[in-house]
Length: 478
Image (cartoon, rainbow, N blue to C red; front, side, top):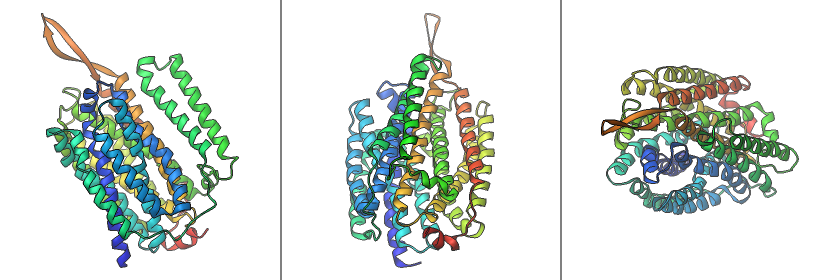
């Protein structure tokens, strides 16, 4: 390995770990934030979805800007705005301003794809899969720090303080990045930004998200809900027609003609949807009172989920090395099949009297295989992209993933709002007083939906044309 490998990977991994810490530290606090701002489960899902929906819009936009203005320059701008937005989030006095700050924070979700393109530009084809495996695994490192440590701070101080602990580290790592990271060698000056495409895509997903959020109150067959679906469908249909006509579309339809690019892009959406749907469901399952949930505190939830993060940390580099021996297609299909089996087991047992240890055993195996799916998918995408359009394609990949990330929590929250069960709070003059909380059936349905998304990945992966890392130079020049 060259010296540059260790310098660049260390800096970019540090940035990614911090951003993942910030994103994950809020997860165990979702039920607490819900009570703090007096909102429903469906409304609380927007704490995650507002950021991912904004990230979906920002990712291709920033990818285009990175191709034209330089990847390091755009990365530095992102880090500055991201640090400011994290500060505003931690001081938000109401739910509306919290969502606004989280929306701006969506800029940070473009950091990882820019990291991949910087590495692809500067590292050899043999070093690239290992470096990308390390960067991909930083999701797990950030989670491994945020879940136990961040949840401890949130439990005994506040979730706002947990946020604020990241701010000085973000400032330090931004300074180091400015001094260490190289400027881009490849610039595509002719690239333009598709504003109309951004508007149509954002409108379609925003209206759909609002409709699904309000469906438990409106009714799933009500006229307002059906109208939101119609408006969303029309917007997305117009988006598809639009990108087929313009010269520099937000998402280039030609990218989907190469199966080694199309499959990772489509898989990004379905895995993003399934993964965030699962995470939202788990947090509420752990912290809801017994007998529906496990009655855990924020800190207990963080400690329980920490092993999952460590498993994903191991899975990223492991599958990154296996790709060099086995190939992309076999890894993606086998990891997806094993993920499907474990998720179906999870959906089948969640309504039973299963212990936390038994539940965690299933989850550990599930997310190990999911880590293999993700790192292999991203590595295949970058290896199959030309250096000239690399930032644009990885930006599109992030947009596809964030589409799924945005919708997943909304669907989970709506299921939790729809399928309720009564819980006895106390007796008043021998009259039982009940409250209604999400039932275990809402989690069962969430996990079954996640299984369907993994099945979709398996079907898509059969279209991949197998290549080995030694062939990547040829593919990258196409």
